Amino acid sequence: MSTPRRSIRPRTAISQSATLRWKNRSFSPQNSHLAKNSNIRQVRNLLITQNPNDFIDTQTIGRFQCPFTAKSTNTSEASDQLNILKKRFNFFRNSWTKEETQKETLGKELWQLEQQEAIIGSRAESLNSKLKYLEENLTKTKLEQEKSENDQMVNLTILERTKQNLIHLEIKANSLREDLKNKASLLDDEHRKNLTSREKKKRSINVYKKLNNSVEYEIKEKTQIVSAMNRDFKSRQKAIGKREDRKKRHAEISEAAENEEKDLKLNKSREGFLAHRLWARFLIQKFEKSTKNSSQYETAFHKIRAATGLNDINQVIDKFLTSEHSYAELMKSVYNLKTKITETKEKNTKLESDLKSFGIAEKGLKASNKEELENKINGLLKENENLKLRLNEFVMNKTQVLQWGRKMLTKLNSGFGTYNQYEDGPFSQSEHISNLREIFITLREKIIPFILSVKEKSEPGQEIKNKSLHQNVYEAIYEIPDKDKERFMKIKRILTKLTTSNSEIEAGSWDFKETEPADATPKVGQTEILLVGEKSKWRRRSTIKQA
Image (tube, rainbow, N blue to C red; front, side, top):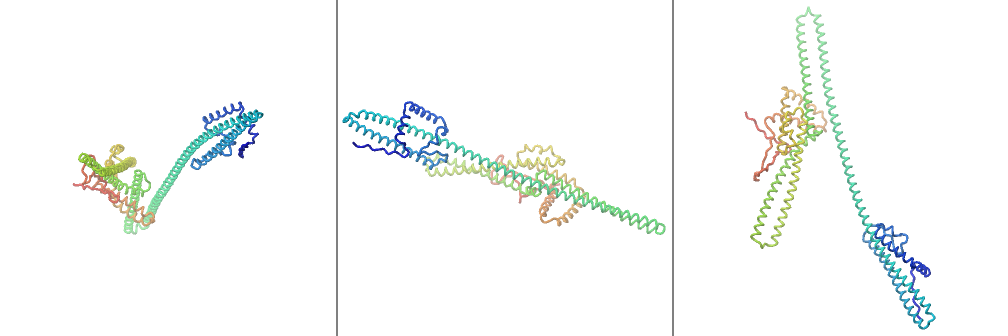
């Protein structure tokens, strides 16, 4: 008889007696029924629940199992999990092959036992019992195999569910990160806005302090001048009084002896008194005129500030010098774009007519010519779209200029106050104006009467006052430091322009001209306002009045 081969147990296997006891207990009819029910429950829980921790015991993980960690789903993780599944599959396949080898060995032993039963009949009962035992072991191994397959399916479904949960959690984490980034960007924007507002506040405070200091300095200078003039006047009055007393005493002493000399002295003293009195009156009038001049300049500065909304005179000058030039350039570019659009439209119509004529005349055109024509058409369409975009941008700029003109009209209405005698005119309807020409004409009508009223209020002795003012100004320029001289000269230029423009306004007028280029053909409703500028300064077109 050939001895059957022994199956080599794995390292993790249990002893034979322990396995028999465990098999007898687990494969009893009651335990088998309970095991089936427990398997059905596990599968049902696996299909219903989403948390794998409810039906996976992490403490009973085998030697070839490893807990699933929520890492990034990349190729390395997938390969690791596949290797683990391969190892488990190989482990179950090896166990199954071992059971099959056991089965084959048992079959061989059966065959040998049957031969021995034929020879030896006494051992039939023992062999039958052994056969039954082996059959029972076979059924148990089959049940264990089915159970292991079910466990494998459960583990695979658990893995799929855990992967789905991991992907869902990663998507949620990415959305939360994006929300965090957006909130951080919003916080940065708010911080920048806060910083800009603080800087503006500090600048306005500094400007206010500078203006306050300049006003205080001017008030001090004026008070000092007034006090000095009062002192001179009082000293002269005292001198006159003393002189009169002395003359009276002298007259009382020498009444009888020197009548002729007394008359001469009295006449001389009278002439001196009258001269001093005239000089005092002249100084008083000079002081009053200087105060009036300074008040006019202060009112003019307040009106400029109310009209423009700017406290710094340099900013007012820069705006006055640069706004008109930029607007003229914008209007010229708008007109050029309109001409380009009309030219492209005409070209498109010509090309469409040519294409239609080619299609009617020559139906058998080559594919290359068609492609070239299509490319040309596409290029022209792109150019047309770009020109449309630029036209929209210039229309937006035009609307911004219109809004600026309306704001200036409202500021002029609120700034001139009592000097405005045309409140019922076009300024009350500034919101209804939709044309740049009308806005600039209304601005001209607003400013000219105010300047004329200022000129009419000027006194007849303006030339004497201007001469004295120019002398005082030229004397004060030498005392100004080098830092503030440029600013002072700018202010002086503006004031000289305002004073000299009164005579020019009577003889001339601000004019706006609707023009069209010589090359372009005139079209209906196509007019442009030509703002004539030279080095960011307005040019006046004067119309000399004829008698």
